[in-house]
Each structure stands twice: as C-alpha cells, then as structure tokens.
Image (cartoon, rainbow, N blue to C red):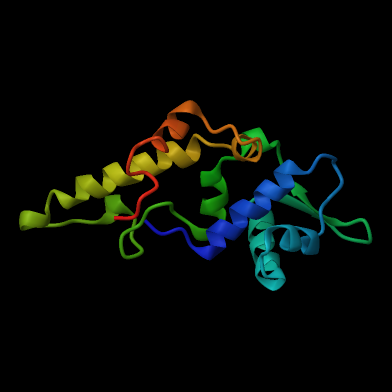
Length: 152
C-alpha cells in the first residue's frame, strides 16, 4: 500500500490544526513551516479539505485555517478520502466494481479484505488520537508485531 505525499501532508496539516491550543486560526505558512510542507502544495490541500468540510478558512489579517469540527470527530480516513478519494482502489477502480476469472477469481475477496482492514484502522483513529500520541489499543498492538517495523 502506498500513502501519497498529498495524503501524508493533508494528515500532518490536520494534526497541526488539531494540536492548536487556542481557537485562533492558523496561517497556511505556519502549518507549512511547522510540518515542512511546500506552501503552494499545502494551499491546494487545505482548499480540498475546506471543500470537503474538514476545515474552515477565515480571511484577513487574523485569518487562517481551523478544523471544522472537533479533532475527535475527524478520522484519518476522513482526511485521506477528502484529498485522495477511496482508501483502497485497484488500478483506480473500487474493489466491488472489479471482476476476475479463472485462477484470479479469488483475488477479489483478497482486495475486499485488504480494504476492510485499511478502513478499520484508518476510520478507527481520530486526529485527536494521533495528536495526543494515544493510538487505540488495537492499532497500537499492531506495531508490536515482530515484523511491523521491518521492510521485507
């Protein structure tokens, strides 16, 4: 599975907003600097997140961005879907829309199982969980597997 730079930057920007201690909006430049994200790329991402209802923008000297709802109510999946679309696709197609024949026929249930697991993890983790460094126990336990941190 591949997480694009766009999805990674979007999640990091959302986490920066979630970690903001006051209700004042954060300027895109401040988010970009804090997370080492190219500013122009971030502006595009923040616009997608605004159109997707995850962030609010405010113009003017005291303007900037803030989360549209509580960090506890926004999952990592929500952020990725707004900037990338479906969490799992095969050749750009959602798994239920695929069909295979012959020995590849059982590939479809594998892709569906993969999508189910990705959803379970990313929908089950909120911005607040990550920003506070408190992943849900079932997700944190996955990082304890002996091969979790090893590249094959």
